[in-house]
Image 1 (cartoon, rainbow, N blue to C red):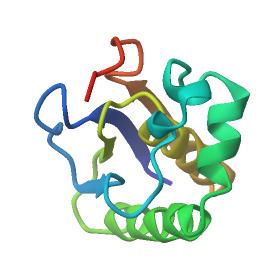
Image 2: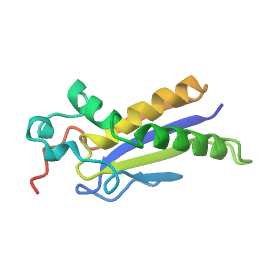
Image 3: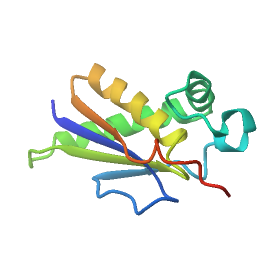
Image 4: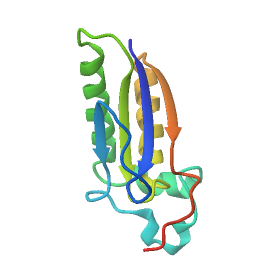
Amino acid sequence: MAAVEIVSFGYLHDAPPVAHLTIDLRHHFRDPHVSPELRYMTAADEPVRTAVLNTSGITALVDATATAVTAFAAGPSAGTVTVADGCAGGRHRAPTFATALAARLRSDGHEVTVTHRDMARPVVQR
C-alpha cells in the first residue's frame, strides 16, 4: 500500500496545503465552535471527537475519502498521497476527521502520517 500524509488545517489561518485531495468540512458539518462548552476544546478532547463523529455524513465521507486515496495510490506514479482536510479554525472538525481517516487507512494497510497544522492555535473569534 501507499504512504499517505494527512494534514488538517483551518481556512481562517492560512491557505490550504497543497494536496492530491482537499476536503472542505466548513459548510456541511456542524461546527463544535458554536457550542460554548466545546469552543475552547480541541479534537484532543473526547467531547469534541464525539460531537464531530456523531455528525451525519462524517463516517460516509471518511469511507469515500479512503476509497479516493486508494485510487490515487493505485495510479502509475509512485509516491506519497497527500490529503488536506480543513474546517474554519482547524481545531475541531478537521483534526477529528484526519484522525478517523488515518485509522481507516491504516486498517486498509497504508502507512499514514498525520499533522494538525492549526489545532494548537488560539480560537478564532468570529
